[in-house]
Length: 337
Image (cartoon, rainbow, N blue to C red; front, side, top):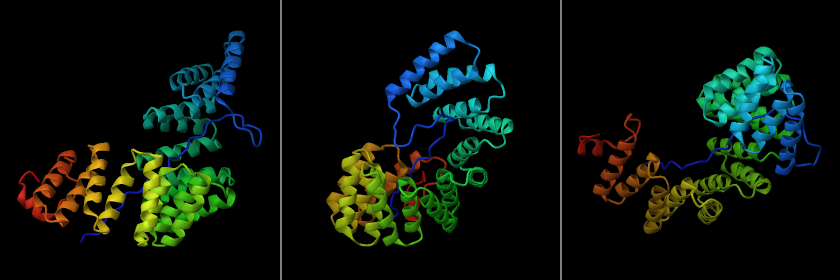
């Protein structure tokens, strides 16, 4: 039997705006952001040439999810003050939200050119570097952010992700551990630490990290999914089942959890339950190649070669570039492969 590939979830990276910080223990409410919008708008009426007012209102719009309005304000701030580094940084965040990564990089680079010590521009550019697969650049930008602000735990976490994607797992683990020294109740770093521990084969440590992360973020479906994978590999099947069940309860559209629970059922010889989960995953993600490959492998292992061939064929249709790995016997059987 071919080694099973379990589906892991990844933690998102977080962009940083240049904004005044809330007081310790305070959480800014949406109503407070609308209050900022109103006060900034009133000030703009009195002094329409003040770039900082547009940036202030743009920040409030950003936090309210009003990205188009925020973009207009950041554009105005930059027109009024072309060397306003914070305006470029924050507009770069909007471009990133819109999926325009190259424009985001250009804005972060402009902010850094104006202010070579702009920590958050380095930090944010590193995030886009990771998303673009430019991992060495992400490490360089993350390192610069850390040099400028050694207490910025988030920069260590994000550099850890770049190292992880590069396959430099010990370096990634060190960054996650150092992030946690600075910020012990940092659920994302705990989760990422668990992922690397699992990749390094220390599954018990991974489970412990996931458990700690869940105490801080008990509604995170992805953490339950990945803990389920660790339990499955430890052959603690009932605990794995409970983790997958919880992941699905929290996020009924969690495709990875359905695939992984299906693999668990398959390993337990619960074939009908496994097939039901694979079918559900495909229903949720009908263009996901992994779903068809997983079900096709299941059919192949159970001697349903026609269904397996159909599954591999569909995977190849969805992956015309040819990156999908199809067993040789099915490539020989179907000329379209």
